[in-house]
Length: 114
Image (cartoon, rainbow, N blue to C red; front, side):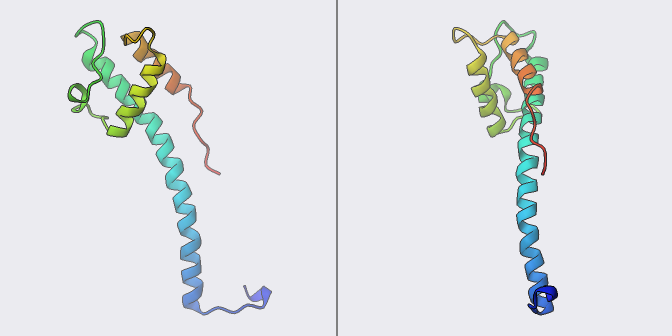
């Protein structure tokens, strides 16, 4: 700042640096959240496959059935249900649909931090 001919007190300089750092941290946390959401969705769907594979022909994605799974989260559950609804054919959900969702999520291009 001194090259520009502007003077600031030490207190103002520290406050300015703190404000500049908040914006950077916000971008970093947003980037991290996007990646974690995809990763947790994969882990959640793998939990569904592990815990329900021998129970029948269709996975039960109701909250009551999956709320005790390790990677259950309301947002992740909603994302997975939406993804499975777009993949499922004829409205019937099968384990092959869950596998297809896992493959699709693994192929998702994750954001890179800039």
